[in-house]
Every structure is written in structure tokens, then in C-alpha cells.
Amino acid sequence: MRGFYKAVSDKDVGVFKCPNYAGKKIPAKYELVEEFFVDNSGLGTEEELALTAEMFLEKVKKGLYYAITAEGQFQVYVGAFRKKEGVK
Image 1 (cartoon, helix red, strand yellow):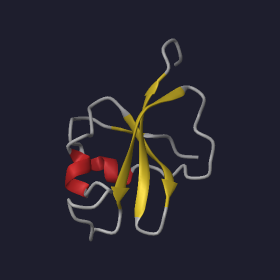
Image 2 (cartoon, helix red, strand yellow):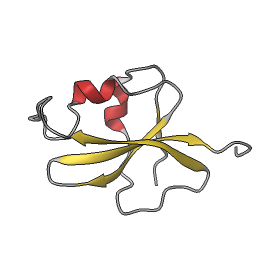
Image 3 (cartoon, one colour):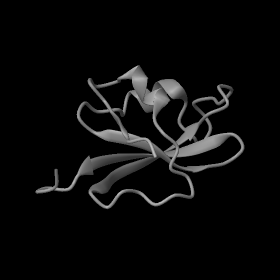
């Protein structure tokens, strides 16, 4: 299974390549910091519950790890994770 995508800068567009862990166990050495509900159709608007791609990018922070944690037909949940302290 692929690892997480680690953001190299705030608003890192590479986060759109994050792996999909939906339905799979998240590795124990990571802890969830925040989870985002994001439109993945490209057709979402700012008025909808799901964040647009641009809105999501505003929340991406350097040094955190990202992965899809759940997926629906038009939206995904993307988790922001960090490694647990003391774990290599």
C-alpha cells in the first residue's frame, strides 16, 4: 500500500495525488489531525457543503500527510495526518 502524501508547502497542489485509504486501515503510526469533506467532481460550488478544490487547497499545510479516508460518488473525505511522536 502506498504511503501518505506529505505536503511540501502550504497550499501544495500535489495533495491531489494523495493515496486512497477508503475502506482500509490507516497505519498506526499516524494520527488524524483534521478531516475535510471535498468535492471531487470538479463541479462543486462554494455554496455547497463540500469544499471546492480551491477552498481545500487553502487548508493544506506544509508537513502534514494527506490521504482519502472515505469516498462517495461526488465527494471524498480527505484526512490530514501527522506521525505520532516518538515513531519513525
